[in-house]
Image (cartoon, rainbow, N blue to C red):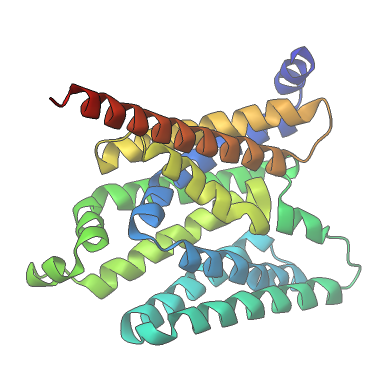
Length: 283
């Protein structure tokens, strides 16, 4: 613990990692709540894996891979959203296709890059300790954009998530709102990739929100609790993984997963206890 604190105070890479973790916590807390209540985890998975294609193309042409990730994530979100709305019966097929194509294109471009020096594993599994300051600024901008748009369109998102038919009757553009929601999820995916990588991004997107759902009484409360849990998971994951030199991303997800299982088990035990107490009180 003391070694971690010393590194945090004296080294910029650890400060960047903490900042990225906190930014990711806000994004996954807010957008992960929508993913959980709307039950679109599979759609989010398709977006997250299609991102590798854009990252590979951007790196091949000498650009920051994050820029390619942003573009490909938004394109994937729009395509999947339109197919989901217009041709619901083919939704799983297009998600699977974009998932596979994105991964394949990314791998091909990364391996064809002259003087190949990128560690593909850092994209797939994340390397939060290697995030540069430039990326921190970019991800902070994305985080701010997500929070501002959610604040502006909160009621529309809420309505679309829980009752699309009522939203249409109220004159809300369901398709446009849904596509905007998926685009914000896509931007969140780009942020989370820097923390845990493409393979584990869905876990960090959903586990804090799924855990928060047990304790929240409203969507706002769920977002706040999920963001706080995300901050705890990312920070504790960095602390736990530092001295044993463990992969930070995998450690963060392990802690988040254990917390979710504990919350689920606790909720189940509490429900059984209340049920038993109610039956005992019945004359």
